[in-house]
Length: 114
Length: 111
Image (cartoon, rainbow over all chains, first blue to last red; front, side, top):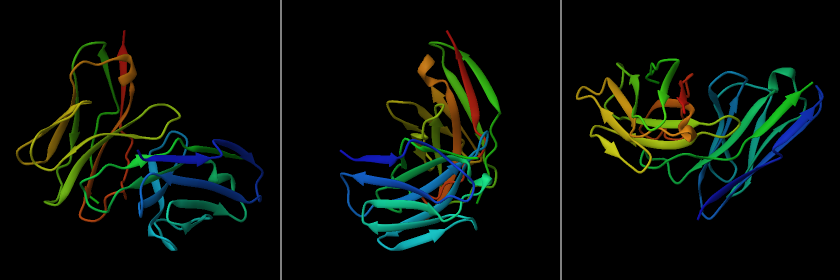
């Protein structure tokens, strides 16, 4: 069966520090991968998606970047965190790009920037 | 992207049916209707999706209006574990996975 893991689950970082969140999918190959963010009290916002290794599309301009060094690994990074980067970050995957499957989310990483 | 409108909150009693409405008057012919739910401090969970016909699965039923401008998620017997935020989302073509989550409906289930 397929599983998705994110880490760390929780982190508190000072403004200006770097960030690295990692997401790994197991049990499938060539998944489409997504990073979403949920600010406090708000809906989810799509940040990045990837349809293959090294292929990253950004949905909104921001202080973050994403990379996909391996087929089932998706990394969210920042060189210098801002207060506004605080939120609940969720990695997700789909089997394919058609509207026939479901989107599977990880457990989430809660980031607090102080 | 076509937009959906949902009530901010709804309440139900345990073991009673729950009907969660969603309006999507600007839906296009290729848009699928998806429902997800999110428990506190967890990632969203897929519930159901459909295009034109009503759909049933082990979690819920989805009733789609004939003109597709509205739909209703039906939980046949609410349990306390069904208390969550329910999102109605439209996604079409190859944009699946690139979902636009609104505020959703906060469902409270009373024992």
